[in-house]
Length: 327
Ligand SMILES: Nc1ncnc2c1ncn2[C@@H]1O[C@H](COP(=O)(O)OP(=O)(O)OP(=O)(O)O)[C@@H](O)[C@H]1O
Ligand SMILES: [Mg+2]
Image (cartoon, rainbow, N blue to C red; front, side, top):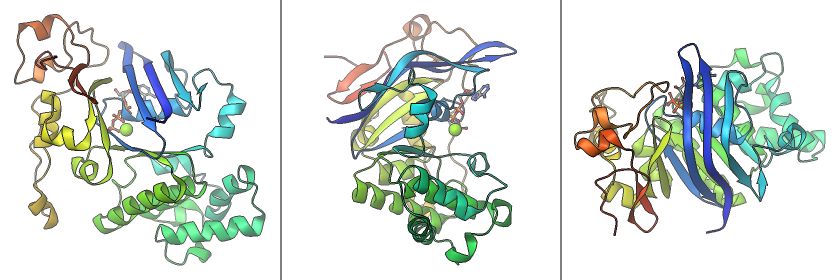
């Protein structure tokens, strides 16, 4: 596999009033060139912190990358100086943030913000950059794209701001697009259009896509491989088909059960998901055994006492569970 990004043994800690919290706990995974990889797990399991680490955007204090490497075309982004990192960020690696307002500047026009990376990183002339900005605003279905170049973020709806941010991240044709819940705030029809636009970009530019989502339906449609996180750790990693057909971790089985039935989803009924009982342990807690122990329907004594490593279910398929029979 031609891997473009390798995350190796990454740990991120936040200092909190309750003590140090390990938001990301020795996470490793690879992203290949042109690959679409899904990163899934419940709220608070460390998905955004993992993505922000790649771009050097962990707020320090209170956060700190404690250990690990993030290799991007052979360079370690964790130790790279800020200047070089800035040249990669928003250019070779771009991100669609979960909170759109964090990446749009309220005092600059939309046009200026979408054009800026094209001028500084891509060396386009002003007129070329403007043309390209309009083209991308149209691609994300902003009505009257030209007229919105002179709008300010507060003049647009939340859904439109989200789409502008998506246009900004994609217009630079990054080698890696990090998309953090890119479409959660959008209505179902637009969501489908934006997701297929991401796949188009991937085809046009052979970009890699790291797609962060809670939505296993989106995972099934979009990604070829999945990394499942729980309480800061990778608990399962597999090709999408294998994950759906033969999930190795009880947590993954819980996530899959919580998916709404496809037929009902089509009718767009509001239905309650079957949730996994219990809550994620506090990250400040010291846990010797499996972090899923308290909620696991299959747990036994060994799970309380010692933590399993990632065990091989099949080639390319690993799960952090003692019940996985390793050959
Ligand atoms: N700036 C911060 N200061 C303190 N703790 C933080 C900070 N940012 C994140 N955390 C903690 O790190 C943990 C992981 O957070 P993260 O945002 O990565 O979760 P997530 O998987 O993206 O969740 P969600 O699905 O809700 O977006 C959480 O416990 C969160 O409280
Ligand atoms: Mg998040």
